[in-house]
Length: 438
Length: 103
Image (spheres, chains in turn yellow, blue):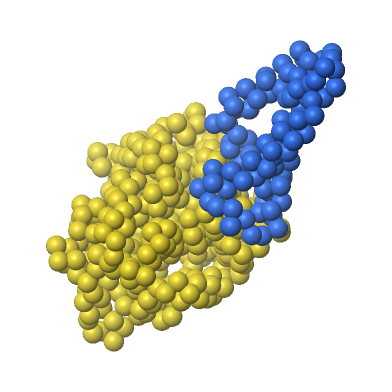
């Protein structure tokens, strides 16, 4: 653990209050609520923020817990691919943020506009300033659609453009555009991948697979050309096992694969996409349908703060945390959870399910002045839909190590049972996670 | 994943269907209660009906989950499908055994 450039202002006070309240081990830390008068501020009222707020509310008494986030509607984002594949209605992924929050959590329906880590202070969109003893950054990530020249989010659902990431409505509009392609009876579908870390990096692959299912169902698959464009050499997924499977399957399904090409521009009315190659050259591709994947980063407010990585592969784009403890590497009273963190893996809802208890353990340890012993192993899970009706339960961690949860489910076999888990069981698991129960 | 974690998730999954589970349980209890003194022998068609229900459940389960029977490919898939069929048969038999009688 690196040392802080400034000693947290009220650290001694916090330590004094917490001393003697807990035993030494993380398990003991959770055995009974910790007594503390810390002001804990959680930035972000999405899945990670809500889960952390509910967990900390239960495991700490006396503390003031403030959740900051303007979005009143909560979205079950893992359901977006189901909507964009024409299987779910948007209503199925919508709920109110407030319904997930337990008693004793102060929810401020504002966005954070500035973070001053040295002064332990954040500023909100209503000009209010909040000081904190401990900060949890769980803002999620930012979709940088504007980096695709000529494109605007409002174009999703028009000119053959789809993108599963933007919103439930955008996912539904994406499905409608795929329907339009199917109705046309022929045409070319392009699928892209951006060259940044992605939340749910399997989503672009799932969209390709489910669109293939819809095209195959017409009985005239040969009338459609399906091509995938990846910025990486011979790679569409970071874990070799799954990457090899996907590329092999696409070869069987006659999907054209074009690597080392980044989507950099779009001429929507003329249905033309512009790609920049790894050697700097450019090419244009005509399409009837295109699925866009936006470049992603931490929100600008995090990027503009001193909390962002200053060097390495995540520099200037993602929250700097120790990839195992989830504690900020320079500001010990700052922790990160969810899509915002700059770690090699960990940008799915299932990742949050594993990160939240680790962050909770380590926050309690920090408040008690004890060593941070809980470790996040990079667990990331994604039921990789390979066709409408079957999927592979891909679970992996740092260095691409496979981490299967169920011994009886092969991590490399397509299965109806895994599809059922995706279709029926993941949302209940997600809901339990929001409540901090799993 | 821990057992308590699995149970919690199953509980969350069951919550939207509690009304249906309650309805099925009420039907079962009522059937067993009112049919506690059965008369006559079980009808010759009882077992064919029970087996047909089980087979129907197995055939429909993939479709009801927006999948298809040909995707039931791994042994856990087949085991799940079998469990659904056997469960449906068992429920049907318990429900009908007191009433579906001859003589």
